[in-house]
Image (cartoon, rainbow, N blue to C red; front, side, top):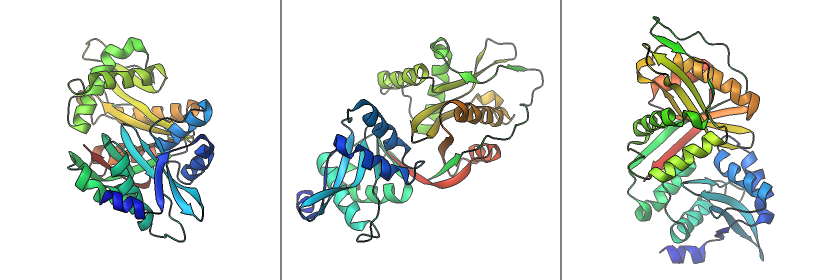
Length: 309
């Protein structure tokens, strides 16, 4: 069935060419928060002159020519940008052709992530071939802010904790940063990354630390040796948007304002040194995290969905 769909489709899926990079970036610029993942890789392609293997062009037939109609990034995660057009106002034709091509040409990624309506539509079409999903998160709030947050109250303390300021992590922090990252990952994703894909996980974390995109706050709890009490990473960066990921607060300090103060300091640092817009996405059922982000000043700008395999 896939082959017949591809033969009938007015779209093709093929590796993006260097001459198409600028047009692809223009597509992403329509919604830079939602498209920050492909934008990051497109900017690297523009600056280096080398288009990565995971970047795919969706081309639509236009007479004897084919024009760029969308893009797919297929790395560890798959993210898509598929604009609607006047002759296909619902996107039905484009999504049908792209989903058939995904099954025929792409390797299934670790996850599909991005704009909820698009991701859930594509997932419904490819599920017979790529399913079952390990977990489906259909409603994740996409949030952003482009102003500095208001000052937050100092975390509550009974004299049992001493907190250092938030700062950029270094490799000297790695031995205490790694356990905090693993704790966050297990709670958020549902498995231990050190047992399944340790090398890739540590390579990624070390890259972020060396790139200056990992932030930590250390603290001493009840006189113990300093450890990570708050941390986060800029997991994706492109188009003037820094997507914050991996936000974590030490379990013993939750509910005391550590996360709220840490997020406020983080957003100020990100906006001053990295990108004018700070963004993130969070499960709609995570009430404590949503309360922190809204208190700091994040506003809802869309809805994401994630399909994990």
